[in-house]
Amino acid sequence: MESVIEEIYRTQSRRVLATLIRLLGDFDRAEEALHDAFAAAARTWPTDGIPGNPFAWLVSTGRFKAIDTIRRRARFDASQHHIEDSLYTPDATEIGDMEPIEDDMLRLIFTCCHPLIPADAQMAMALREICGLTTEEIAHAFLIPAPTVAQRIVRAKGRIRAAKIPYEVPGREALPPRLDPVLHVIYLVFNEGYSASSGEEVVRADLTAEAIRLARLLLALLPHPDVCGLLALMLLQDSRRTARRVGDGSLVLLADQDRSLWDHAKITEGLALLAEAMRTGEIGSYTVQAAIAAEHAKVSSAEETDWRRIAFYYDLLLAAQPSPIVELNRAVAIAMTEGPAKGLDLVDAILERRELQAYHLAHSARADFLRRLGRRQEAIAAYETALSLCRQEPEQAFLRKRILELATTSERQ
Image (cartoon, rainbow, N blue to C red; front, side):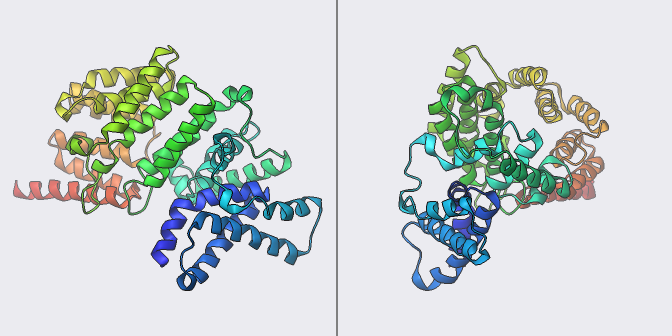
């Protein structure tokens, strides 16, 4: 039963939280109610059984726990009377069966991404509230200290309270200027699912599915080429999810994946959305990234991949959106056409600027170039650096395997 509750927490807790925030009107109060609801589930479900609708049960329990807390503290005012009344309606079983514009997760994203909240705090808040990441995990993702993340989240919540930021999806006429940070957050949610920042799993399918669902809702609200491009990108990437692991959970690199396991329905839909986004002539960064993903998706083997075209797309992306991560990906693409020595030069130049010193994939890419050049001891050292920075267990296992292979080869020679 404990494992079942943990799985429900992992897959449904953020939806429960989003609805509780709407009902309670306060992030901290909703988080407390969420924890109280799951604590009650841990006490009662082993004897009473799992309810038919765990989501509705948790929302209902959470809001009644909030009523008890408000009464216990005996600090009623007008707003708290309103909160207490709202906790009794609507029926929790009806929550979740709403029109797209009423979706609580979409409300949560637009609230986190309100223009009155600084951009860095928007991202931290979204990863905390939507993905459920800890401050330490967020800090690792952004390569910043954990106390900085915590301060950003506290300030964001304070700004929401002080400015009385509404918990709502804006009207259609107000959507376009609010779009960029919302798309960024949806893609952050997807990326955390596609390549979990820590833990035992390579992917978190609940997060990738939620990001795709939210993008579909947003596309229905606003048929914008950037939304279309993002949805195409996520579908094309998610099509490879099953092939990224083998039976024991080990990581499988793109070049080694069994392409018969790819989800070709998602590839077909993703390619159609990409074509639609391209037709508009407004080609944003998500559409360019989708075009890169399409180069992998539309060939039947890794050997057929057009790396020159991929490098060209990264040139476009780098010109429009300068980023050391984009530079790193471009270096990998160029190494596939011009050789590992060229890739090594490019990655070393990035690392010399110290922008990605704490990013394990930069050191892993460098190690791979060194391995391909036959510089085994240097490759081992680079893989060990990557391993020291990596927090995801399947990636750690992959890096250890590479180190062992190189060490064994060196001993034989």
